[in-house]
Length: 140
Length: 131
Image (cartoon, rainbow over all chains, first blue to last red; front, side):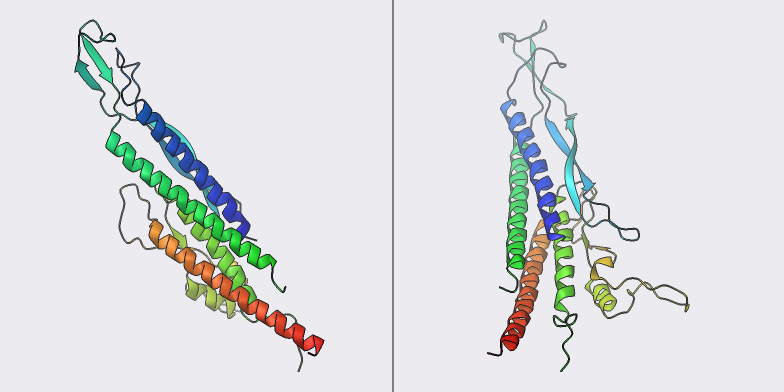
């Protein structure tokens, strides 16, 4: 019964979107972390999603059920914010501090997109559940 | 009147199989709404219908008497790709709103088929009881 596969698919979607929300939270929390060298500075992190085949269907037909998974997490290559602040306790020998390359506007938009996708998956799961329950009541 | 148990539900048993398969495909589209390079899939209803009527999908033909026809299950029709309404930079062709609408429509159709099956069952039950 392929309606049962929807639970797996929607579940994989929800877990992937949760990872994305987690990374957004991490990026926003660290937006103002200051450090004294480029190597130590926090960089914005983004998940990379990839399709995953749920089940292998017979020979001539392509598999229908496809979930999603987080293939990996990449760090943003955008330049860090360098500021001249000789009074800052973290300033290096030349008086510079380094701030992360987190773009708050991007992160907010990302957060909204992730939560919307999460909601879509939840709705889909609920509908599939209702359909299954009605199917079980057949002939009663 | 001869009653065959195989045919009492008419098209509705195949319709239920098709609609549950389609729900799965649409769910995959929705789950992959943010996956780079993912192409939205769907069934071509015309192919499914001709398959059920014993024919072949529009792009396949048996041109020789010894060719083997495809099975007539609605689930064995090949999936098609949805034509995107707007292109995105990462190659993803899923439009969440379109998928949502299709999923709702499909769920509604599934419930309709269920209603028909239930109606058949209750009418046969009342005939058996002789009420």
